[in-house]
Image (cartoon, rainbow, N blue to C red; front, side):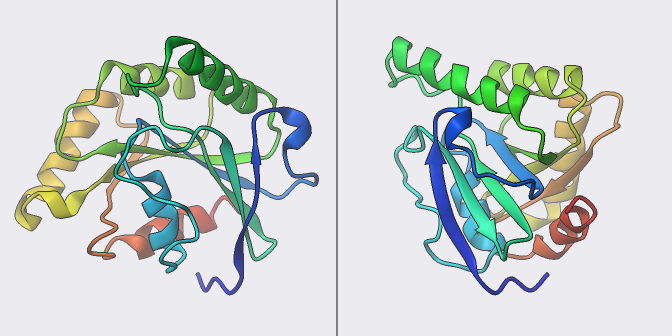
Length: 193
């Protein structure tokens, strides 16, 4: 896909702040610091459209990125960040769930996990939530540049077996550093926008 004019549109914490209209929404979920913002920048071939940080828990609002008035990338706050206060975790958790329940425009959930590690309990809860709510989903095993190229495909299979034993979801590797897996992801995203 050729993206010409992606732009950050709004940060939201409640339904009244969501963008109006009915553009399809490609929603990014995953634990804190798994690389959701880097994923957006890499897919759009931009350096800093989505703000990235080495500090987990930086994204605390739902960020909507308008992609050429065709669809939105929706960057949800990461889960599982222990340095956030308990009250803050509950508040963020509520508006994430509220968004997932109330938005009628979700076309696809891009569920990012870390290719180097087994899914966490929080990852498993998110997976269960996605399945229980029948949300269309692909799983992206991010940070593929952190392991040997020869081990990427095998590790994706291991994660798929662990998280999705029914093998009814697509699992793909990804690397913001290497930028070599974007075409396959765009081919899938194109089916949903």
